[in-house]
Image (tube, rainbow, N blue to C red; front, top):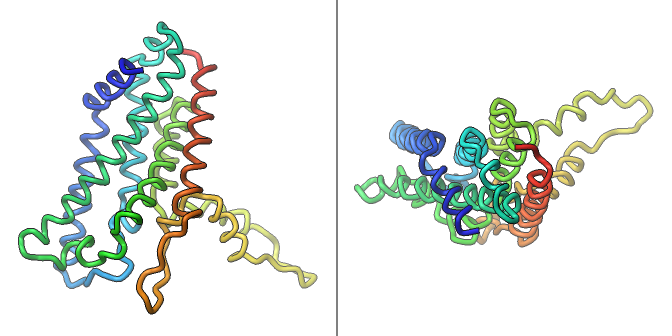
Length: 257
């Protein structure tokens, strides 16, 4: 396992996708500073992870983990060792977890730079501290990681970069995460016999099953920002991660090299 982990991190270090991701994070922070300098006041429910492109950037790196690894014939090399396919799946899932953590940490560090040079109003972390508490950041990390691991699985299954990038775009933008679910509802015929579709209830029920609780808008109440729920913020993403790992392991056990 140690050799597979070293191989995964080595390939990740030589991968062009993380380098592009770093540039995207820098561009995102430049846009945040520019918008703030133009007169926008940050605070309240502004979230660096939930309201901007970080989920997509993390999913973008996950595409790179699969794509560049295929180019290097990583699976072909792994099957030569005992339990190589299982170790391959584990190591690449760990690589995605590491890359997701690094991208988020870089974004948080860059966001604190304006505050360090005397402009705290241009920092989302400083302007909206309740949206960046350790427990909320952990829940957001788990949610983003679940989407990134999903993209990794899609990349493995499809073996097409274009398909994986499309999925990364759809699930990586929090506001688009539920959009595919709106299409069947929009196509339903207008009720003619008094029957109606509770769209809000339907979407609420579906969203409870997705790792989006920590990435969607929260509600303010007199005591402050509503905390992330234990089930929606932690249990649901962890269940998704376990299920995605099991699916990835099963896929790698049967995929041709």
